[in-house]
Image (cartoon, rainbow, N blue to C red; front, side):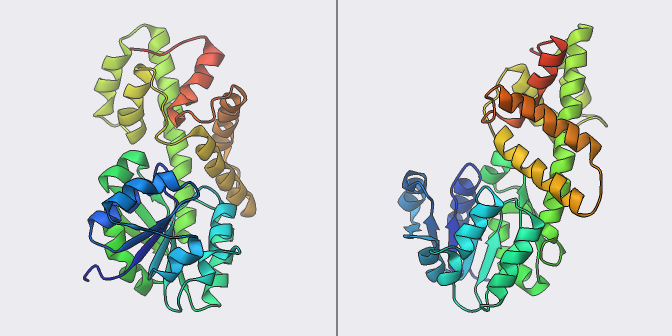
Length: 298
């Protein structure tokens, strides 16, 4: 398919900015909107156009992507007074790539469908590195024919595009992803604290186990940052906590206990209480360091 579909992008933060940039690099006509105009400037300089509101972006676009923080942000951006629904043409597609409640996703999708507008939920995994390098994993919920229509846009942002199932399935898959991510993060933090207390060279431990069965994205990407005491965010504790609340709420909807996830959520609360909500999720190790009196460093 030629890149003739006009794309709108709403939300230009740590993830959204580079994702929109990769769409522009792939040759799609692009219009953008962000609450703070300065985040749009690099895209405007590269050839994107600025919409006056989500409604205005939608009026200029065939495919409208939202990449914002929370369920209510998506609801307001899509269904609010100057929302996408008021500008989108019949037959256009709204693609929400945020991580939000599956229940809210289905509610928004139903409201759009009543106006003849398609919707996909397509949250992503891969962090800021994946967003910059266009190597995101994209998990999609919605009608198969609409997924195929949008696939060239997805391919501009990611390497693994998986159609999970009907509308809402993408968001459910993302919550599975987040349960796994925080579990791996916790295992890494606990293992590094143990290595430090046991007196071995923690940097060599990370090198040794990272290539074997214990290797993980968390260990190989965040482990070296911990050793450098680099807690700059690729993904913040604040946003991770939002996702964990969604996972725990969704589990409650189906009557399922998530024991490990709930424990990690509470450990992150310790860090929030210490004013660390805007540090990267690798700062989870600080909660264990606080409990044990051990500081992990190279």
